[in-house]
Image (cartoon, rainbow over all chains, first blue to last red):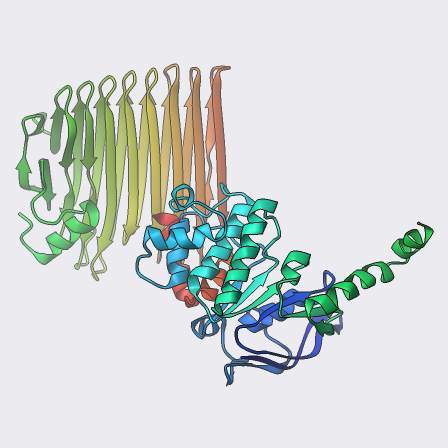
Length: 246
Length: 308
């Protein structure tokens, strides 16, 4: 179980402080699929990074399976079963797809069959990719799918995916949502997915709308989706005017 | 041959040799010959012109054979200048494994300067691997200055892989490859310097023949206060294609200078160069940490992959 208690995060701006997250408290029970959604710049990624240890909160505590992990680094959290799929994964000259999956899995050598399983789940063929370097020769969508495969290879108890759909083509996206569905159905871990996609939002047990550094709404997909659509129109005076003119 | 544990460890590091090599070989130890074997197709003989070194003659049509010619220096104060000439016949396909390892526990400088000259016959393919490594806790310097000159005849090719693993205090590499019609040279250079080490690599690929190709892939890591200078040059004198790619990771207080140059003396020459120097990207470290590696492990992993 993941518990966030009164998490705040701010950065220095000029002489003052700019609040990014303000007093967020949240509990996510095991085996849940939770989607963080909300406007750009609202604090979703910062909140996810704070869970992984990629950002340090200025106030508050994080508990993972009852243990206070607020003071732990990224490596220690990873070893406790937290994983994180980056929105824009880095590239590595010289590291192959097989190397990355092997590192993620934590075994000395990962068999081709196992690599194939992980890659197939993100719509990639092991024969084409295993020996390729994760460098600029791969497209953004390919790197993104390899990133997600590396999270699957970790078999972590908590998987955080930051906009997994970004840069991925429609066909691969369909395969990806099936994979999330399968993981969820099999009860293989807790997932936090940052997403704006209706298809992914509709898979969630709970949707959390993060905006202006706080939790704006919480609920099931069927409760939240109409709310998001209403906010989309309601929040923009131009769109509202246009919509009313129709 | 391979009398001591130091000999065995050095030979394994620089030439992947465990036990007596298969095929032709010449092991040079502390300026003497520690073992030699010729085969039906590859003949190794000592030089007869007064210079130190060997001649290696590979008969026409030799395919699938390997020749090991490692050099080890295990005594402090050994300084040598060696000339090895390779005469590769036509239609051959051979692997040549060179390399030099210095174990210096003393206070005197140990130094190996070697000039390797290859004459590669028509339609022959050579894979040439050269690893350099130094160790020992003495104050004496470990210096290596290799010079490699390659002449590729029509349709010939060389794939040259050079690696400086660790422990070489000073190196100045000179490489020159001249490609004839339809010939191809692929040079992969890997270099790591640390401490106060200095390294300089001067390379020239001359694409003389029509349809010739050249490719240089240089990757280096400079740590601590070490310094590196690269001068890879590609000259196109005919319809040809050449590509120079230099990538370096800079760490600590190191210094790296990379000066690639391309020269076209023919309108049909297509030449490209790329050079990049940068530190390990923060997001690379973070990514590997999220996979459970410590920062040090992540750094090692990135460097190992980069120099692989």
